[in-house]
Image (cartoon, rainbow, N blue to C red; front, side, top):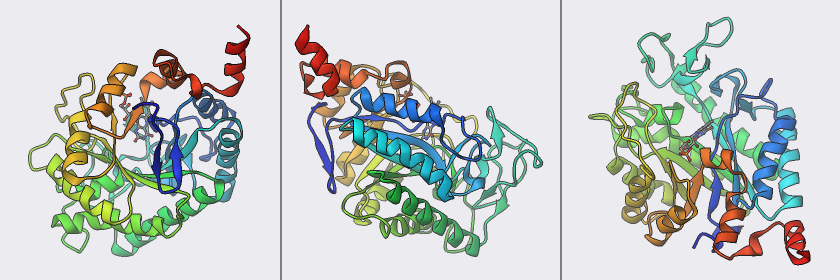
Length: 350
Ligand code: FNR
């Protein structure tokens, strides 16, 4: 199944390998540069069905660090467009972008909060820091929430104009959207807090606003944390309920990760440890899902698909080690039609 195409709207992925979004902390002013051009381009040459560009801030405070990628202005979008054009011209891979806001987890370097002078005042649904040693984030007003929804919409518009095939909204890992979803980080008493419905409102408003910018030629994914491993926190049953609603809001795939919102949460990490969350969301909500987390082998990826636990395989650290994992897997599984055509020619002449 790894080499069976799959379609989201009119976007057909040639195989099920996805380069998982990974911040590279290598931008100045949020601008992609030559490093990113080669970094993403090489994964497309490596046969990856979908190359996903890292978490990209929808406004300056949306970055985790001063060196994160941004898409809040046209100069940033123009740099990204160069990468998109390379991928489309030189491979039959598709390329997506994860649009994100760090919220209370912004203004850091190497996982530590930086000063207000070097960084910025962080924002969150409620004035609760991620770690008690950090500055108290600014509690967003309803007006500010509406502006943020608009920031996501504008980012999606720029991404569409740059030619991206997939937009992924980052709703996981304790960043702003997740901060709204969780009853542990969101204790608001207005229409954005309290009930499950109210806590989901920010994400659903973003989804609807982003969808207004998308045609059938651009698919929409949402990454969530299936659970946050905390008593009374966001759990996998919430994820199933959310997935059902997202499906009705024309979200094409739920990319199921976990954790990130609760400092010190106990997480048991093993091969494919997040696959059960993807499986439960896929089977109980009847949605397409992506599985991610310690998936490092071709046979392991194939088995996840065969068992109906996911539709796409997101690979992060392993694809840093092996940008050619999709090509390598196609060779192992004798599916060499996925070689870049230049490599096929070398094969014929040998
Ligand atoms: C990540 N991860 C991540 N996730 C995300 O949604 N957006 C991001 O920008 C990043 N950034 C990032 C940077 C780096 C260097 C790593 C290693 C990871 C998480 C990543 O996409 C993935 O979910 C996890 O790494 C688990 O998958 P692997 O690494 O076990 O395949």
